[in-house]
Image (cartoon, rainbow, N blue to C red; front, side, top):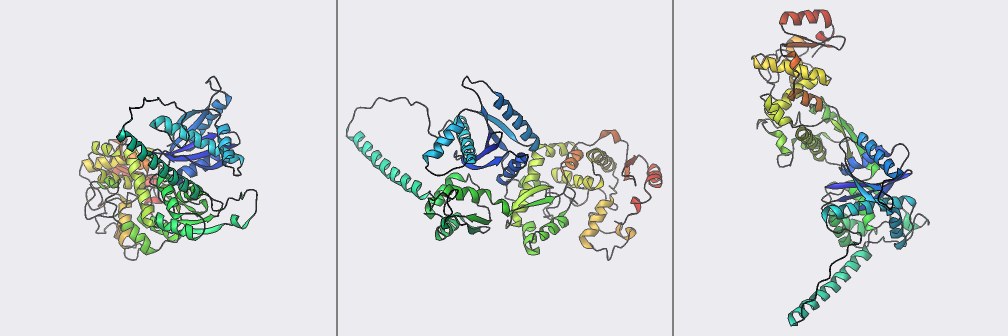
Length: 514
């Protein structure tokens, strides 16, 4: 589990991160309290793909909460509002800022106030990991160890001791080598001195670059002392994360830890925001990626890649083998990606989000309760998404469709016809009018074919998915619906009533070209 720790102050918020598997906390630049702090923290959480927070909760010398404690608890409540998915826990702390400043002074390197806050967050996170795992982290353990009576010496024991001493010496030498070569190439404090060593070097990490390749290139650029030490540090601290592709401004005053942390979190200048709305389809997805500079070939390769071996591949359950389209599975939301990310990585992130939504809302079981498998549920939800634009009407539209299916009727959905035409005639050169479109020979044409369309026609959002899984029973006797010119949905039980609604409420929208 990956974690973010926060040392909350009224002027700055110290930030640190760690992976519970590695148990090494890494400080990050402090966030200023200027009204945008929650937005900045949310951006970091998205970039690091972390939603678990450890917040330091101060107490006085008697162990009681103070006014500052109440301030921190209110901060946590506000953070939860900004990041609804956030999992927050508190870690009791006291005098962490004092300990943090002491550490920074011992390093004999210049530091700023924000560095103290970030170091304090690191201590909070280290303490949390130590308590939860029962194992010491990089902070010196203060626990007393029980002494053990020495066994009677003999030759074998003497040999073992000698070996252990030798290993200890070798280990000490190795640790000393590692520690020395983790230091910056230049010991100049760039916060106080303007020197050539402080000039930034633009360093590029290409998509797909290995850690060893990057380490060698950093060494050749004179930005680190030893490539092997960089690789070891990366393996110890990355928590399984990969290097983020892009361009970075690095200099010789940065330590191996500084550089590693930056290459793991990514440059904020190298991030682009990608919004894919619920109800949009594969065609929209392709157009948006083209605007970000991806080529048709790259997009096609990403959409046709094999995702069957991924942890989230269970979302394709029930999908026919001859249908490899990802339509319906790309969850609509706003995401952040690094420039240069492969399309396959972007697609994978949206698929992973769909899996999280399906699992968190138990939608597979709820679809099955309605008589649909997962693929059929997503397919129907994709139609509901395009037919209605709010949760209340989506739940009613879903029930109307269930009624029609139960009685052997066709769905009769115009949006499925529209999708069928988009697949073969997007410019409407052949199907130029509605009468021709409604006769299109396609498994997506639910005006002619009974049952569900061949597959999803859009990518449904959470409301459409949950509405389809739990339809509104108040329209259990309805078989028709339409959206009136005033934007209101009208429902009816008979064709005569439906035609009357068209006459009264739908003179314009009901004649719009498909």
